[in-house]
Amino acid sequence: MPSELLRVVVVDGAVVPDTRRRLPGRGAWLHPDPSCLRDAEKRRAFPRAFRVPGPLDVERVRGHLAQQEHQVQGSPRDRQEARKQVDPS
Image 1 (cartoon, rainbow, N blue to C red):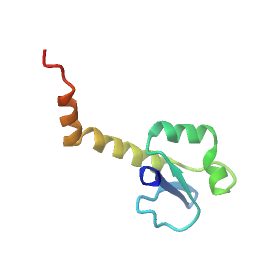
Image 2: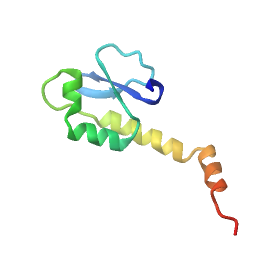
Image 3: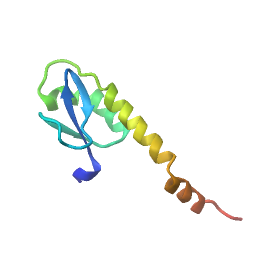
Image 4: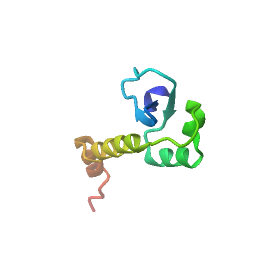
């Protein structure tokens, strides 16, 4: 489902997150998961998806995913869910 995916585009030789899905140019879709990003890098998927030669810098996407992961882990809802799973015995 596209709402669960992160759109990324190339800007000046770097893959950048397009969170608002408004940046111009060819886009690619990625699960917002660091392991999915690593797999895409291993397969060299970004140069093929964007039809550009050579490797692309993905540090901005990596930073975005790390920030999103940190926000989810620290959210009040996440802590509430963790409390529900604790065995009271």
